[in-house]
Length: 77
Image (cartoon, rainbow, N blue to C red; front, top):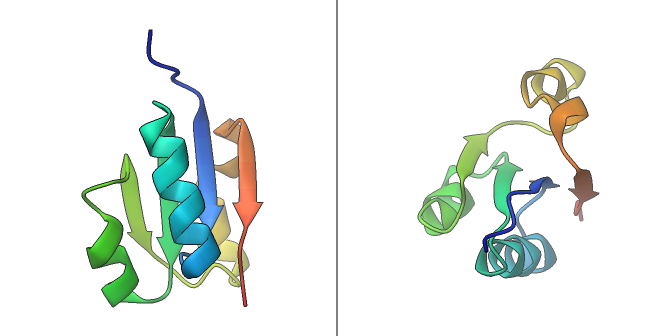
């Protein structure tokens, strides 16, 4: 049975991308956010939701509805 927990990964560099992919492979719903449109394009087929956003901006974070996630991972360089 698939796991429908929801996770948010902020920053999709090396670690964030690997984490997001692994969580998705485990059946989780993963929202990935990064300011790089290129990184989002590379991962959007693996993610439940992919968002181009400056995750250091408070208003951008509020749009991601972090309070609805089971966990939020911050992966900023």
